[in-house]
Length: 464
Ligand code: ARG
Image (cartoon, rainbow, N blue to C red; front, top):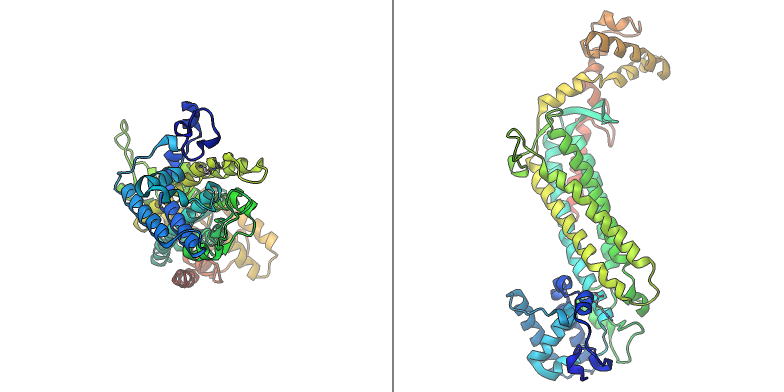
């Protein structure tokens, strides 16, 4: 049987066409067509380099670049006929190039393999995705800074074990999310350096006999460095795994943040109001307004953790060099990037619209004996050992529970039942403002410190 009846790119040594189901089973074009722009970018750089290396003539190079540019326009106009029998994005574009420009199209693949081609495409694609994602992180952080600045003086209960612990500034609480996102940003910027290394020129696995000049393609494609080993270049996907690890941490943070928003918008907490446009109703319960966006983000974190686990598992059993297993890297990677980008976008849109219910938060802080530690610290300043103070305040709280009074609502005589060291000046420390203002050091919750942290945050974002 002639090669025409088998795959036109590699059918030469085959004596029968691939089984129709196997062709579909092994094809990746349905999902890897998404790489078309980066595939064409890589091919144009490769052709440009081949001409400089004397492998292609100027006319051939120009015909190839012209053809690829027109193919890109065809794809973007929705006029490209993607063919599953051509397996993947690379062979679809190459076959179309040969349709358009004739045999010169067949010269593009000189000194290259799909193995280094696909590794290059994914890196170029991921580099762009990271750039979009880090912009969304910054936008979300800007929203957090603005809210924190506006609400530095708003007091809410801080929690440990989800029990009221100590009063904190609402702005301070929001800045905790800002810190986490700063680390997520750092991780992605760092990951991008390792994504941005060029495998092109590795060819199938061993390099190529043509006089390629990798410095040229490296420069044209904006890579920071040339991969130093061809076997490694075509096979490892550690850069994609690293991205999924950084994405997983960012999603874990967004998921925790989501959990708070879900709690805080409930009737039981009632701490914040989420604008209607981020919520949906129930088809049966007319009173419902559900915090769908945070709930979905919390749920979607699972997809990204799944991508991380999937890619690690995909990679761990592979001997050098390229194996077809690696075709399975794309869907989880694409999904992880899409999920993180969209989740960040939803949060960046939502955070500036959050409205704290200031009185509800304040009341909750007042009710929970949140200044008990402040009373203990007051007694320590009177010279008592901390452990004794802890016990004294414990008795006062027990009395408060029995009588329904918070510490600040007790009279001086009532308080002095527990220690005669307590004086009139105690009431200044038992107020919510007294409590937060007293935590006046870097990283503390005093409103002055919150404003200083906002200023540091703004400087950080301005330097990006
Ligand atoms: N579609 C393949 C992938 O995603 C491209 C590389 C295929 N190389 C090969 N020799 N079959 O990994």
